[in-house]
Image 1 (tube, rainbow, N blue to C red):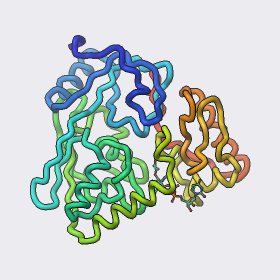
Image 2: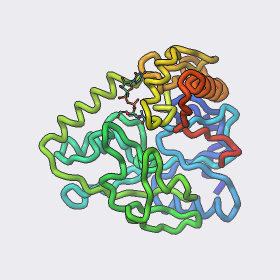
Image 3: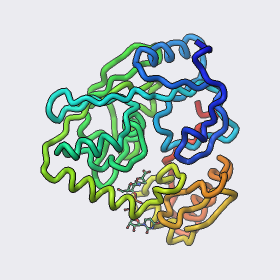
Length: 289
Ligand code: EPU
């Protein structure tokens, strides 16, 4: 098995934030049987692993990761019946949003422009402009830790704001089925949502998306801006001047720069407003696996 693994992969190359040291082992999977084989191998060998999609909500440690990083590239998309889409976990969420809307299906228009894989979007229950990944989900086929595939109907899973049951599970998402609704407005809505995203978010910068969850009382970005933190910098990490809930890798930032800036922003917002912000970006380091 070890001969299939790369040992020279820098995680910053597979992260939208552009931060991360070397993975001890790295492998890409395109077929589900390979994913099953890898998970049962890790289970038997007691090897730590991390399932990677498009690396968009992850802060990898600059020290690297003493684990096997499995990049899920199972990227098929098939329309089994009109409006019924079965999609591999490695498929682009953004592409799915654009393609379904173009064909007149509504429910995933918001996905257009989100730099996630289907697996990552389900894991985080990605959402925007009032739509959520889980809303039109029917089932997920999941590779358990021992390599066996189990189907979870949506009703057996919990989804809420930036949360899914997958965050507490130990295997890997293989594929998902969504049933969308016909709509003559789908394409128009998708283009409007994409335009709104592009004009309010720093999409040309290296970032991991929004860093804090929105608290009940306000938007995290608004609070951070009100505290005068836009443009604040620690090392190479900077609070975006476009959207304050995005911390960007402005210049060769390390994971420590990013963590220090995140902590500074969290403390400053609490000091000035009394609101405690909660992070939504995962810090992937050895102790976390
Ligand atoms: N705002 C500011 N200053 C800023 C940023 C925002 O005053 O620097 C204000 C805006 O003017 C607006 C309010 O805050 O009145 C909300 O801003 P926005 O519409 O940009 O949405 P958001 O609440 O900041 C959420 C999600 C985004 C998602 C957008 C669009 C969270 C933490 N963020 O952002 O998700 O794309 O809505 O629906 O829930 C992500 O999770 O990574 C993410 C980017």
